[in-house]
Length: 530
Image: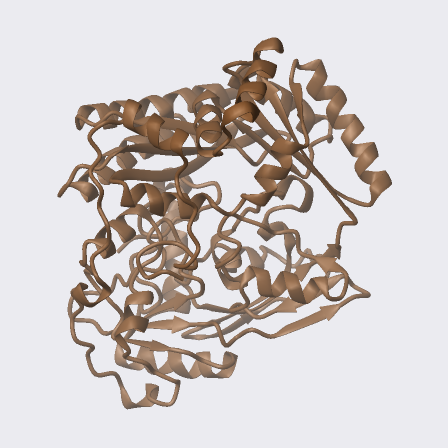
C-alpha cells in the first residue's frame, strides 16, 4: 500500500483528456500538490515499551510506523502528503495467533499502553489513527499473520483469520469452488477482520448480503478475556453477542476469528448498463425492484452529475464517444442517470432473474445501454481510490460520505445533503461538483453515496474538509438519516453517535466497553469518542 495514497504505488489510473478539460472548466484555480518525500515526513521518536511486549515481533521501523499512523480518509492523506503525522504508533506488533493477542492485551492493559488493531488500513473515517493521550504510549497491532483458512464445504461455511486480505480469502475459496461474494471498493487491500469490525457492505450486497449478514460466528479477544459465539445456524439465546462484536471497530477487543457463510462460485456474471431519465425515476425503479424481490445482485444508480463525470473520466473519445452521445440523444437520455445492473449465478438462474428485473426497469422507463458499460464498470470497480490520488496530485479536495434512509424520505435526504455540501463549499469560496449514487437497496429504503470535488484551499485543507463534512453530517442528522451506512463510525462520526442511538444507547455502549476494556486501551477515541 502506498504510504501517501491508495494501493500499489506502481499502479496508476491517470485522468483522461476529457476529465482534465472538465475540471479546468468547472473547477478552475486548482494548483498541483504532490506529496513530500517520505524522508521529509515529521515523525516523533518512538517511546520505550514494556519489556513484556518485546517477544511479539515489535518493530519501530520508520516505514512501518508511518504505514500504521493513519487510514485513507482525505484528512489522513492531506496531513501525510504534507509531511505532518500528528501521532504515530511507538511500535508495530505482529501477533501470530489469538494466544499472542491475549498476551499483548494483558501486558498493554497493565502498563496503560493504547492498542490500535490494524488490518489493511483502509478506513476513511479515522478508524485506525492513533488517538491516545499526549503522554500515553500506543502500539499498532498488525493482524496480517492471523491468516488461517478452513472451509467446511458440507455446511458451506469458512473459518477465516482476521488478517486475510479480501483477494486472499476469495482465492482460497475459489480453489474449492466457492465465493464469499463480498467486494467493497476497498476489496483489494481490506481484511476480513476489517470487514467484520466495520459492518462492511460489498458492491453485490443485494445478492450476497452485507458482511454482517454473512457472519455466522465470531471470536474476539478483549483485555478481560475472550468472547466467542457458537458455530450454529441460529440461536434464540438472548441478545446476540455476535452483534456486539460486529461493528465494534476495535474498541472492545481484537476480532481473532470469523466464520462466514459462503456460496458456490457463480458460473455466469452478466453486467449491463441502463439509463434512467432522472435520479427520481431511477430510484423509483430500484424501489420497485427491491419490493418485488427482483433486485440484481449489483444495482447502482448514479445521479446526473455522477453520470456525466463518470463519462468524462471513462476516457471514451472520438467516434465511440460521438456514437454513444448520439444514441443517448435518440433515446431522450442525453442528460440521464446511469444504472449498472449485474446478475451472478447459474446460467438458467441468471436468465430467469434478469428477465424479472428487466421487465420492471422497462416499465419505469429505464433504457438499455448494452453490456459494454457493465463490463467497463466491472473492470474498473476498484479504481476509484486510485483516481482520488490523481485528483489530489492535481490540487483537488475530494471526499466521499454515505448514508441511507427509507423510501418515504429518500428524495428529501438526497436533496438536503447535496445542498448542504454545495453551500458549504460555496461559503468557503470554492466551487464544487457534488455527485451521488445509490448502491445498496432494500425493501424499505436505500443508501446514498456522495462524492464531491473542489479546488483545495492551500494551507486550509483540513478546515475545508471539516466545514464541508460537518455541514453534510448535520444535514443527515436533521433529516433522520444514518450517520454511516457502511463506512463505520471511527473518529469522524463519533460526535454523532448520540443522534444515531440516543444518549442511553451511548451510555450502554460505554458500560460494555468499561467491562471488556476497563483500562480504556482499545482504539481510543473511536466509535464513542474520547
